[in-house]
Amino acid sequence: MLLMMGEVLRFADVARSFPGNPVWRFLAFNQTHVEWAGMSLHDTIQPGFTFLAGVALPYSIRSRRRKGESFQRMLLHTLFRSVLLIALGIFLRSTSGPITNFTFEDTLTQIGLGYTFAFLLTFTRERWQTIALAAILFAYWLAWALYPAPGPGFNYAAVGVPPEWHAHLFTGFAAHWNKNSNLGQAFDLWFLNLFPRTRPFVFNAGGYLTLSFIPTLGTMLLGVLAGQWFHQAAPRLPLRRFVLAGATLIAVGLLLHVTGVCPIVKRIWTPSWTLFSGGVCFLFLAAFSWIIDGRNHRRAAFPLIVVGMNSIAAYLIAHLWEDFIESSLRIHLGERFLNLLGSSLEPLLMGTLTLLAYWLVLYWMFRKKVFVRI
Image 1: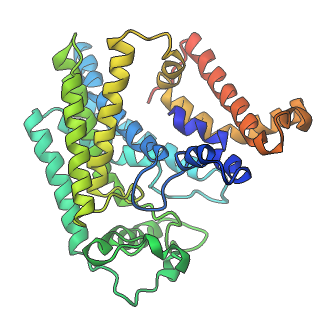
Image 2 (image 1 turned 120 degrees about the vertical axis):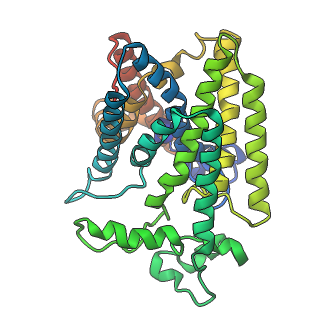
Image 3 (image 1 turned 90 degrees about the vertical axis):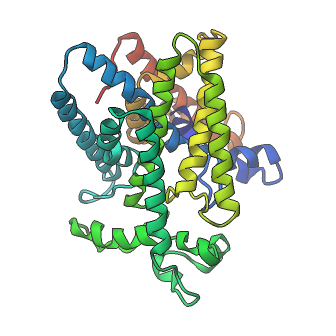
């Protein structure tokens, strides 16, 4: 979540002022999504958020069971949570439009669409959860593989893919996963036009899709498995299991990508992306568990804990307060102060102050024990 809030640092703007500097170029790359295939650090935000939602599920269910809640009551609460997540995602996508923007590719809506299914699968045994994960990813891959791939004469310009972008297009079998010319695009052409819009939906400029919630459910299930392993190993940490799972998932995802069976594309959440990013999440979880719990470096991790304990609030603050905070800083600090490091670094200084303001709000909430829960 801190990575998402850190978008305000605007490394890309700074990198444009220093085109020959490899450090700024590296930072800028890892603060933006890759165009299509591959991964940057920024691309790990959504799978990380989704994975942790899965990790929390077994703990949430166990806590509610201890309180004597029935399955029916837990299910109703889960359905409410799913609807609220979807509604929040749509709301955040509609803040600058004339009418409600019914779109379902946002992180919150994607989690909301799959959350109830993940909840139900958490009640099954680990073996069935693994089978469900494999079945979901294989069935989704098969549906895309059977859908006709775009031919050599396909009009990519009509779906928002200009000629200069064609270097990112796949050829051969992998073309089934090309931008805005796939099964998910066909579904959205039908589904999204069922809702009121200022103009008919034709394509998503970034290539994002509603149907991505299906393999995103796979990411949540990987998180559920991690949460269960945490509980089974307590009070010890299942670090070896996490590292082994992470390395295996990354290797399988890469194998599917390099063989052309299923490319790694975050924007359409391909099954290989589910495996690859899930492996990365396992490795991150192992690293942070070892640092914070294994080595007891809680004080050093405190800034992350403040954000992590209020992840929904952090998400909303980053989406809704950025313009207000930046305009307030310009009014009260003035351009002279903001250009203290030079005009080239002004975006970085502004971003640092904005990020600090975000964190201070979350710190105040942490101190007052104000936590946004859904």
